[in-house]
Image (tube, rainbow, N blue to C red; front, side):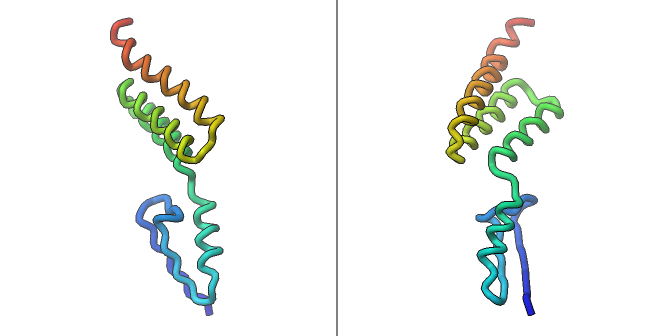
Length: 103
């Protein structure tokens, strides 16, 4: 008989957040499968940016969200996406700095 208990400390369980207890030695396989199903840090950062934008976040907040996206890609060692995200973050931050003077 296989007993499985999954406890996650957030909505999106990750490899660090989940504890899997399995009788029969399948813990590692289940933990890896669970990690593969959860969104990456960059995906969560992208969704957080979109949600903040829809909610009417300030330009400064959007700048910070774009910087968080770039940082997430850097941590994931995704160089191409990091470069692109860094440019978008710089544009968003310039918008935050100069847009008040354009109105």
